[in-house]
Amino acid sequence: MDSTSTTEHFRLVEDIDSAALRALAEGDPTAFAQIVDRWQIRLINFFYRSTGNRADAEDLAQETFIELNRAATRYQARGTFSAFIFTLARRRLIDSYRKKACRPLEYVDPGEFLMQGQAEATDHSREIEEAFHRALARLPENHRAAILLLQQQGLSYDEIAQSLDTSVSSVKTWIHRARKHLREALKEFAA
Amino acid sequence: MKTKDPLDTQINSLLASRPLRPSDDFIARVLEAAEADAVLRRKRSLGRRLAFALPLAAAFALTFSLLQLDIGQGAPDDSSTALTQAEAQELFLLQEGLANLATVDTTDFGSKEMLRTLDALYLEI
Image (tube, rainbow over all chains, first blue to last red; front, side, top):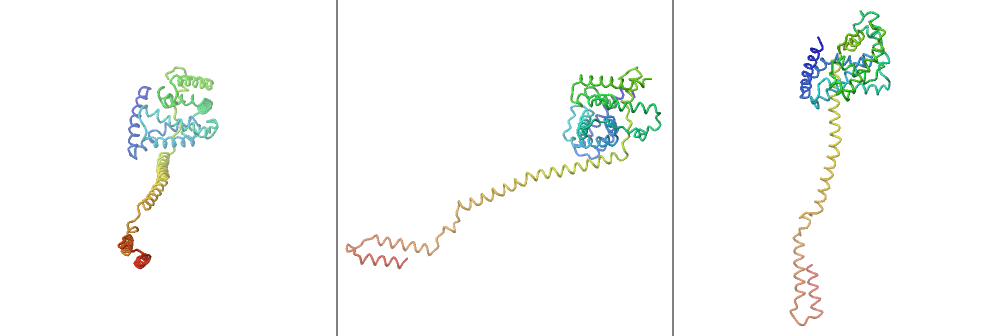
């Protein structure tokens, strides 16, 4: 799937989800399950890359879905559904950082990667993955969120700016700095 | 981001990856938690309504009872002001007696006449 078709795919999914959210607000009990089913992998992995912990990632994803359920009646499709759900997701993430009062990603369990279907990965790729996790952990939260929303979630700069409640130029700066930091941290793994 | 730099390609690949699969029961847990949250919100909403409604109802009840009390005092019952037949008769006789007292039908109006009139009045009352 190239980037154009990926973007088109996201747009289609967004339309379906906006409609599902409207159906949920109108009392359709199946609409919520459909949204959870479609978004669980995206949200869990966004949180996983932000916290480095499966349990936290699932808890935060669950809280985001509950928040979405609450917000269904007041949802107005002014922006995209992606921007909306990641606005909620980032709020949950920031709340969790405040609660823990410590930096995220302090602990990454390498064994967790093995349990997640990566048992076949070579030592080298595991090493890169762990270095990548550490490098992500050292990024400021807004830089990390910006680059994940762009590269992992396929959001546009406008959508990222909306989700992070900032300007597009700030988003571009944050992504540039994040990429520079990651390049520096992973330069020893350059092929 | 399209790039030919191998490191950038590798970083993009790592960033785009979604290594975690949700737990098997994740959807069920979310739906259950959402339902519990909805129930809790309904209870809180009812609690908030009651928190407003109860003092309001008490205020209405108090106002109503005070109004009733005020009406009771301001408009006395007819039965309390109605004269009994005996009282009306007594008043009539008193009026007649006084009228007789005021009527002087003799120029010789001495102390004896006066006493007789008062006696009559006294007896009648």
